Amino acid sequence: MTTIIQAQSSGEVVEPGGGLTIEVPSGQPITLLDVIWNVPGPLGMATRFRFLAPAIARGEGAVDFETAAADMMDLCQNFARPKVLGVDLAPTQIIISLSDRAVPFGQSDPDATQFFEAYRLENGACIWEVF
Image 1 (cartoon, rainbow, N blue to C red):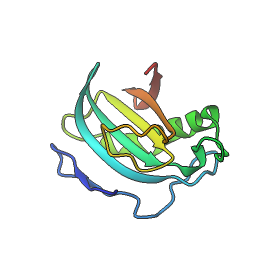
Image 2 (image 1 turned 30 degrees about the horizontal axis):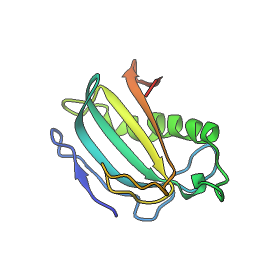
Image 3 (image 1 turned 45 degrees about the vertical axis):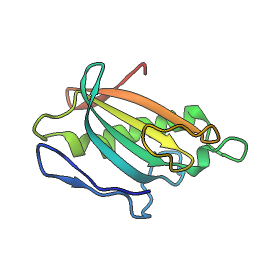
Image 4 (image 1 turned 60 degrees about the horizontal axis):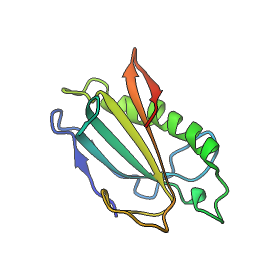
């Protein structure tokens, strides 16, 4: 399940990882599933960056939530933030999600392990918010 989502205001295209691993502090393999631009959120428009992270799987996963949380902060700051800065109608919030398997957006999968974190952009940095 990979899609290309185009930024509605800038025309920028963010392509899924195409199997390329994105480096994070834990070293777990992470690839981009998709980006969903300008979704209404509690603080205004949000952009969701959804990543595949098989190492968070229950039972067999080697990465716990605390480790994944540090990876999500890194993904916000070093992957997502640069993609939204300077975009017309930039989002007020970035949501980073990790899933051990591809789950279509808006659908549930009781067997999937998923972690979500929300960040606001302030002074060019990702600031964690309670989600």
